[in-house]
Structures are given as C-alpha cells and as structure tokens.
Length: 519
Image (cartoon, rainbow, N blue to C red):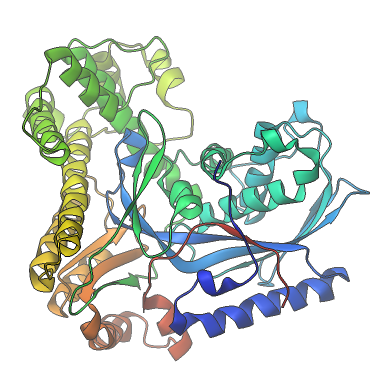
C-alpha cells in the first residue's frame, strides 16, 4: 500500500533554483510555530498546487485530464495535544484570522462549515472533517496548526484544493495513533477522501486537483482517470534540445470558486450531467434509478451496446474514434438552432424525462443560478477536449518511445504538436464552455506572439492563470515581454517580487509529503 511519503529533507520537493528560498520559508514557519505555541512542530504536511496542462472542465464528466503539480504549495506545521480535543489554527499571513474550536460529536459532523461564509479556515475544517468521518475517528486528539501557502489564490492553480489536501494529510498524521495500522488510508484513498471533503465548502469538483496534489510523481505530468475508478499514470516529457518548459502567467483576475460557483462552476456540472442523461435516453441506454450518470459513462455504455471493436488500433486511436463519433451524436441530439442557443430549465427537464423537482433532487446538490442551460456547447466541449487530452498524452508517449529507441526527439515538431492542442483547448474553453475572460484572451494571444508554441487558460477559468509551452532557452525573454506588455499595461505598480510571483516557470513537482526532520 502506497502512503504519503515521510521525508527528512525538502530537496526532493523543489528544483535547484527554488530550493534555497524554500528552505528559508520552511525554517521561518517552524520558528513562527514555536513563537506562537511555545513548542516546536512535530511534523509539517505539504501539498502542492497544480497547473492543468490540458483537459479543462472534463474531470466531473468522468474523463481523464493531464495536469502537473507545481512547486508552489501549502504547508501546515502541526503539534499534537493528546490531553485535549481542541484545535488551534493560525495562518502565517496575518490577514487571515486565527480559529480555535472543539469538535462536536461524530453524529453532528464534528465541525460547522457554512459554504455561504467564504472564510479561509473552511478549507481546513473540510479536510479535518473528511478524515475523521472516513477513517472513523470518534475522539480526536487536539492539534496546534500553523499554515503557510504560496499557491496564488483565485489563479486557477488549485490553492483551495492544496489546502484541503494538506489539511487531510495533517489531520491523519496527527490522529495516527488512534487508527489501527491496517486501517490507515493509502495515498490513493486520501486523494478520494480529499475529493469528498472539499464538497463540504460547496464546490462540486471532479477530483483532478486533489488527485494531482496528493499523487503526483517527480519530473512528470500525470494522466488522471476517474471512471470506473481513480487511476493516476505518470506522463514524462522526452529530453529535447532545447528542453520543454511551461510558464504560468496570472491575470490577477481573481476567480473564487466558492463565491462564483452558483453561476459558473456548479452550473457547468449541472449542464454536463443534464446533457449526459438526455444523450443516454436518446441512445437507448439505461439510466440508473439514482440518475447518476456522466458523459464518460454514456460513451462507454454506447460503445458497449453497439459492440465497438478496436482490433488493429492502438488504445489512443480507438479512444479518438469514439470521441469523434460522440461529437456527431451531440450534433444529432443537440444540434438544432433552438438548443444551440440554450434552453430554459423547464425544457431541459422535459428533455431529461423528469419533473422539475425530480431533476433538482437528482442533479442539483449545490446552489446554482441560471435562466438558460447550454447543453450543446458543454457536451461538444467535453468530448472534443478529451480527444485533445488523448492526443497530448499519445504524442508524449510516442516521443518517449522514440527516445528509448535511441532516436533524438525533434523539439520543434514536438512543441508544435503539443502547443497546437493547447491552443485548440483555449478556443473551446472560450467558445463552447464560456470559461475564459477578456484578460485571459489578451494574455494567451500575447503569449503566442511572444514565442509560446501554445497557450491556454488553466484551472476553472473566468480569470486566474494561463499556461504556455515555451522552449526553455526562450523563457527569460518570454517572461520579460509578458511583464512589459501585459503587467506593465494592466498592473504598472507591481513590485519586482510581485511580478515574479505573477509570471514564472515551474518544474513538475512531487505530490503530498510529510516532513519529519528538523530545521
């Protein structure tokens, strides 16, 4: 059983250029903890943010995605207090108020979390509650906790999920002595716990952020599949001359999932699941009595029903053929002018074969606000975006096979293929999923003119960050131009330190870890 690794040196977590500053931060966190609580931390839990290279808004439709963990992360220093059950939580950033609480009994959910109150400590409470509920801890030890985060908030780099994952890891480590060894969750199980836990703060996420934060491996991106079970496969990039690099550029337009979810994130979940049910009915597929069905299940059931055979084709070729066919199904079912323009709630329910209240109970577990539902555009995006994910992974794996055969991979050819897929993803996010914004459009356009082979929004969108594929030897001049022409125009008063935090290259990072050494 693979567990979250315990480490005694943080050099395994960061690239050489960032290691010195990371050591300083960890040391300062340990010192601040001792000053605050009068004792040194017993361990420090760490979970990274992530940048999604391709595969936007398709995880909750059951499809695979391809993110990589980044070096920016969340840390929580912890000391246990077995003589009490109370928890004291503080943030190294004084802007965020401290919290002290004593957990309720298990039947009352341990803690109170109000998704309507958008406070930073909710994410810790969600992770804390998730562990106690899933592992079955009834009388938890008290905890002293101090958090430090460097993942930009609202940038689409998964700062909230990194915090939840870190809280899950920290809570489990603090309660370990109360759990029989055979019942300790694996790293994979902790990712699943984190996925469920974050829903306590009112976000209907699909699981990419948590799986990447906990399960990533060093020096690789990860292909994450969700159906029929959560599965994570490393995807490596070949050695090229020049090497491949990914540069993250933050629009500084904040997109807070918890605040905007009813009209954006949660609404897209409802639209894609409503589309899945309608497509299943049109294809004569069985919809479970619970109504729980997503677009990946529709694809699988459809091709099982018609007896799809892929002899003589690679897995990628077969997947691409299926996804192209599902695009045609979307055109046939949703391709009328009326549906393309969007339908009202009553019409969507009628198409789904459900009454309005029945639909709400099945598919709307979190608040949404909308008058029009875009079934055609959302389904079209999901199937085409998954095709791009398959092509991106296949391109990388073919290049790795070429390298393993002793053949030098042509950098420009590889970068053009991957970058083209990223650009097509951005077009789909803008035109079909409506999750871009003016600043992201400007920034990705500028990135391409500044030398990026491809550039796209990353994360939920509606602000946040873009990720660009750039040849490593061109990164300094690329960043300099972005700083001058985007930030110089929109944010001329940023300090050099703030600029460096807004635009940066990141090496692929490892996933969650628990530091048990000393500074």
